[in-house]
Image (spheres, protein in one colour):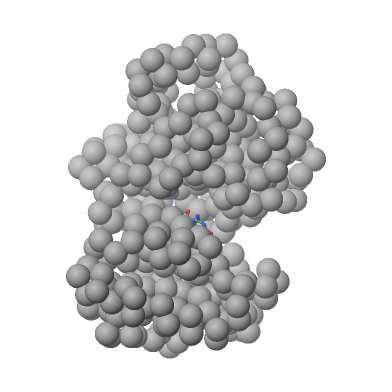
Length: 339
Ligand code: 5GP
Ligand code: MN
């Protein structure tokens, strides 16, 4: 965004506003971290802010400051729609198109409040008055930090804001290892620690609070791991029956696909998770190097995301979905062997 745009936003925020912050369906650490960071920032600067998320999220994110104030659209529809109807400004964070907000798509499309988008996904839609979109960014949380800096608001950042931003950067960078992690990212992390983010506590809350069942489910997922050496690909499957066997809870499969990608000489990894309720197979794709799973997901699995991390779905059953995945691999063999 230009300097002028930040001046305009500062002018807009010079008087108290009713503000709604929304993020994508199945919110992750970056969605929740960026939403809560902005919530705390706006609340501290005299606005009436509300975070509305399309649906619930994993327990390992349910400790963040003010997390209990988040409205969930699927179970708090009336209250959410009332907040949206009276909003002066709607921030949309960590997504690039209204359909990524699931059942909130229609209410967002019809909403007439001024929109501000902050997002790092490819090909953003053009619905916002102010669009801060940068695909090179590690996370929307890193962008929220920059956004606050550009509003000359760094002094407002307290331990609540620092903690929320830290969570999103940490989760979206795979704990500071993905290529999107830059020296600038680390400088921001350093300043967040200075402002009161407790890095050890945060890592512990997010990564070291496993249930026994979740680890058993991981064992099941790993025993279902298959490798296709000629395509340098690996995939994991989980059926609904297997999920039930280990008392699956939202978020339990988070990160499983990375075990497939951690194999030596594998550059493409997938996990296929059966969801009988929605009648779909939820797919997560990950890659190393230049191979774009965003492209693969857009071409074959009704999804998208980033170059090295994308999601999608299939309406076929799990067997057919795997067969399709295996059948499309040869067309990518050249790229996969160059990656
Ligand atoms: P995950 O595999 O963790 O669900 O998602 C990885 C990345 O892909 C995230 O950045 C997420 O926003 C994006 N993503 C996940 N599912 C979808 C989808 O169905 N459509 C699109 N366009 N992006 C997705
Ligand atoms: Mn993100």
